[in-house]
Image (cartoon, rainbow, N blue to C red; front, side, top):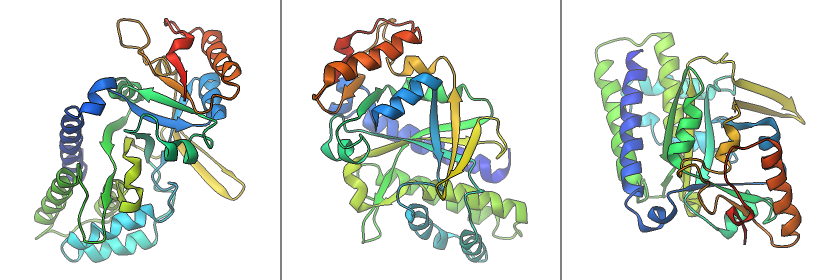
Length: 306
């Protein structure tokens, strides 16, 4: 493992551990111990039929300026000439640097904005994931590093917002300090600079404007050890690139019943956004799960409607 990656892994693991420690002590999280993913019924159908879950490239997020915004908050903290060289690389960056991927979640169990923006305008589904199960699911892909971390929101006064802003800033500052000290009297090579730019982009992808703070977003981050990893796939459709890493396994189906509670699905895993036609929707989802022979005790009571 290179020096730059070693420092990144060390600091990012610290951040992930501290964030988990914090959320584990909050009352709302203690009740269900879940994070939530909102999506359309069609997307859930696709996941069940293909027995796979995808994480999207950090270079292809909803806000096209998201990565640039985060990079602006980190680059100036590096010593010269690192700072200048990083800025030059950022200007030429492209989706070809796609070997980091995210799967987005929220702390919010039943949120109107989440239903509107991500849950097919209240007609989709909300899936509850136990973090331990979700991490273990992604760990099953060989040759990737996986983290579960909260997104950090930045205000106009150069501050990272609570509750995770302080520990994020500690992580970011320690990473930059270690890099600055290492290269204070040493020239950085071209390959090392590209690697530094990549890990700075991963850190930067966690920073969003305060206007997004109501989403209380968390992300699974998958970092591949090579851009030609067998689980990485992509397409170019309607003028848009779709680059993703995919975990295609029979264990995918257990994620939708949240296995791990003495062999019984924990409650409130799937929630339908709209009660209109809920019998047909619930029956359809259950039939898909049973058709694929999920080895779980799951019933209609495990799928609720708003």
